[in-house]
Image (cartoon, rainbow, N blue to C red; front, side, top):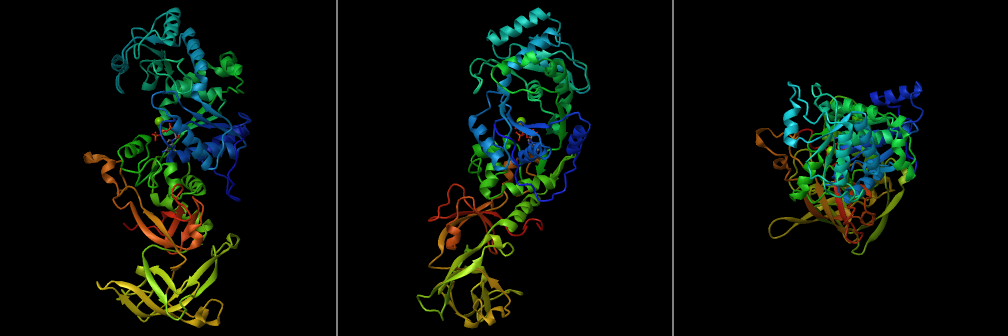
Length: 581
Ligand code: ATP
Ligand code: MG
């Protein structure tokens, strides 16, 4: 366990003033709370996505800003869907985003307390064992316009309920035979309050709690009590839980853990530090982004049907995916901040996310040169064996990023489209007989265009103006264009994966007309090319980001990159190419 640790706070950032932070401030000012405790409660049934990053930045961010603590709690009450692989990945993702938890908990840690709480509800006459089948429960529940009907089992005696509930736990009944239900109000306008199930029978061992359990608590019961057990002060969740809040409060109030420490005995016996309190649930709007889908279920289908290369495919909106794509933790925190917190559901433009990455990388990514579609350029007035080492700044605005050596020789690679035999109007780069500046090396003139038998340009023969070399008085001579290059004999061949948006339409989730999000994939979302990168790029560590000058931002692939066989992913282009579309 460690204290919630801070990612470097943005210097002199104005205090955030969203409605949740406003509530927290008031609760501290009024003395309602002296310490703020939050939690991030994922269900370990898939990988986290960008939407979760918003929740993480909120839950951990608030704890951090107000000197409180935030727990990471796995909501593992459904033993069927959960997998330790997801638990591992979620921990990694939270840390990667720059946060650390106060305590790591599982809802299953509290199974014994939940059970005691359920018996307490039964003794109070607040819960009963019901024998209706799932289908009957639905029939009795009523609709939005009609009240429900009381279950015929609603008025069992406390003794009978206790006996049946204990036998449910002992495994005497098959799956689905009985449930434990809260006795609230079958006529409530809020369907969540029409005697919701608190426990169901499921003869499946639990991955953590083990084979001892065959009854499992339902979400609302387990979640509200987990918050109470941990003394969570502000339980932040998305808007779809607004209608559940009365049930959340009902569970918290009727069990009243904060007044009944005896219910916590099973945890105290195991040495848990406990601070039971009455938590308050506050809802905020989910993050939705166009050109993507954000539900674990839909993302899972993309993986299972082989439509992407796995959970960490760089086109996926999972945190594992965008991390591999080259998104940085700082860019995601910036994004969460920019999107803000409110109760209004909205759709954020994908370019907002991309711009956050551009901003972060523009400020922090070292510059390198790479050529993705190479054309040979020979500097004919240099000797065959000419080699020199130029020194380049790694960043035009940040000297602290230092300098690097860039080899320059007689034969270079330039981008094929930086040359045009018949230039379109306004073309500022190299043309037959024309001049261009080779970034940091001097000005060349194209004397001769060499073609193969098919008429394809294969080589440009150029002369370098000796007076235009760096450091000489002629170095500042004006020419229209500057292009990047790499030395052919020093450059390292690299695989470069040119990623683009996974979906071709802004609303893949819109299934009107029978369309599925799976029909909306962008066929151009990945193209792999062989290019050449300067030696100082090839030597990068995995996950190092660069701006390849004039091309975009790229990252050394987390899994496949090796200095002798570099692999780079395009994280984002230099400019938004979608907004005009
Ligand atoms: P999904 O529907 O993608 O499976 P979920 O809500 O079921 O998501 P959980 O693991 O239950 O996922 O979520 C953990 C926390 O993250 C919850 O508090 C939830 O409200 C929050 N969360 C999930 N998706 C988003 C989103 N798109 N925007 C903001 N918060 C989200
Ligand atoms: Mg869920």
